[in-house]
Each structure stands twice: as structure tokens, then as C-alpha cells.
Image 1 (cartoon, rainbow, N blue to C red):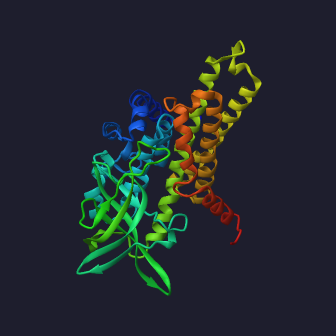
Image 2 (image 1 turned 60 degrees about the horizontal axis):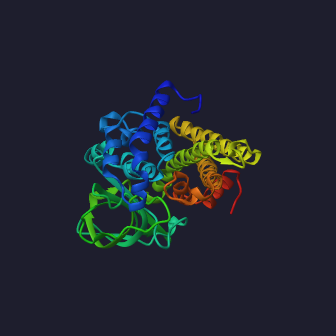
Image 3 (image 1 turned 120 degrees about the horizontal axis):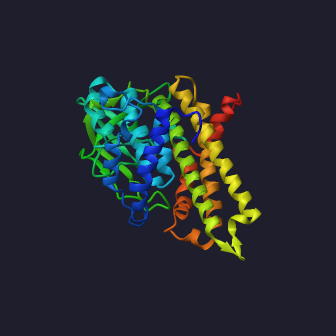
Length: 383
């Protein structure tokens, strides 16, 4: 762990790491095999206060910051990416929009259960025709008799169909101005007539993470369910994604470290041609590169988190962190699988699950190409 951590941050890291090893890791293989999110693990994370880490105590939070959240997510990502993304999405995409943009009434009503881990919420942004080009949103919401009437669909929405999912916040076109779409964000409670959580996806990885497509057919919610100012949805969700990229970078760093640790242990114990695999220079060089990736990824997300918590601009640094850490996770998963040989192709070994899980880290909450675009624009390059 980075020496720049405070004593309190080191204590948090140690606590979550122990929780990950003793509670999360033992159930990971079966949860992945059965595509099941353990609600017992979610409840235990709530009891530890993980869902409330970066929120003030007045709403039931722990009074921490984004650095603390990243530390917890990294420790979880080391052993189980599905559980780590459940926390990341529950905070960054579920509770954070309410905290950042909600009215005081919305905060008082919704945040306590979210921060305690008693409820989860999803963030409905991506659509079949609106991924990286989020401005291409086609879901609409029109006012009728004091209610928003919502029509459209969303896809790849995390935490949208669990037994404790309370609502999803969706982006929708609520009008137009000078030929440009007016995009707003609206809270839609689960169980709203006309709102359907479709069957869960059959995914390559993150199998224990809850992910569904959503359909809205004349779904009606009160006008007061608008989250933030009307027409501010596009700007607001971009800021949410900037923060979320720090958390995804932390998750990626944890995954990269988990692969490194597993590969080092395996190389030391695996005998090949009469000596430990770890004595072979090729294996040593591979493991050394894996270590360098973990170190670089951690420095990158720590820097972005410190900037964010200090109230300084951090969008470029968040993009750099997600780019570097996402690639580190994927590269380390590939190299660890190679070190393990045939065993690396067996799902009972964590590196196999990391190999399947890590690819989405280069896609979700902004693809690698989007991060490169953000960085290029920060360099003053037009396009």
C-alpha cells in the first residue's frame, strides 16, 4: 500500500482486505458459477459502513472521502470484481447522484437506506444506440398532469434488479432548445407500472454482479422525481462519470494486484524441469512487469482521488487513472493466466475469473477510446 496513506486509511485498507479474504473470497467461485449476487455479502458490506464511506454523517454516512471509497473498492477488487463493482456502482452511480444533485427532501428520503446498504439503486444511462455517444439518448420523458411519462430503454444497468433495489435514475430527453436535446435525470422507483426490469444478462464476466436491460412503456412518476435541474442531466452525469472513473481505476488496481499475488505464489510453488518456475528469468521478468503495472495504476488513481477530494480539477487525471489501471488489470490477468498454464484456464482459480472479468474494465464508465479523447482534449487537441 502506498506510503502516502494516513494511519486511518491504512487501517481501513487492512480491515477491508481482511473482510475480502475471510468473507468475500470463500464464496466467489460458487457465486460466479451460479451467477448469483450474495445479498449476505452486500448486507455485511453495509454493516461495515462501506456504502456510506464518502458521505457526511448527517445522512448516515461515514464522513470519509473518495480516497476512502477507492481504498475499499481496491481491496475488494483484488479477490472478487463482482462484489467490488456492486459497491462501486451502489455508491458512485446509485447514491452519489442523489447526494450531488438531489433536493433536501430526496436526500433525507433516499440516502439513509442506500448508505446503510439496506437498499441499492441503478443509474440508467446507456442505451442500445447511446453508449460512448451518451448525447444520442432516445429515452423520452414528457410532463402530463404533474407526472413524467417515460418511454424508452436502457441497457447494461448494474444493481437494477436485486431484491433490495429501490430505484433507478434514468437520463431522458425532456425537450429541446435551439435544435439540441434537453436531457434530464429522473428517479424511477422499482415497481412503477410501465417500468420493466428485463431478464439478467448472460455475461462473459462479472457473473455475480446484477446487470439488466430496462424498458419503460408509459411509466409515470411524480414531477418531483426530477433529479437536479431540468436540462442539466447531460452535464450532471458527465461529472458523475468523472468520479466513477477513479473508483473503476481503484477496482482495476485491485484486480491487477490480485493477479500478481496469485502468479507469484504459483510461480514459487510450481516445479518445472526440476526447479521452481519462479527461478526462470522469463517468469521473473513477467512478474516484475506485473508489479510495475500495479504500482503505476495505484499512483494514478491515488493522484486523481486526492485532487477530487481537495476540490481541484481532476477529469484528466481520472481518465488517465482509468486508462492506465484498466490496461494494467487486463495485462496482468493475461500474464497471470500464462504463468498458471492450463490451471489458468480453470474457473476454480481466481486468475481465470480475473481474465474474464477484467475486459469490461476497459469498457465500462467510458471506454479506453473515450479516456484517450478526454486526455487529448486536455492537451488542447481539437476534433
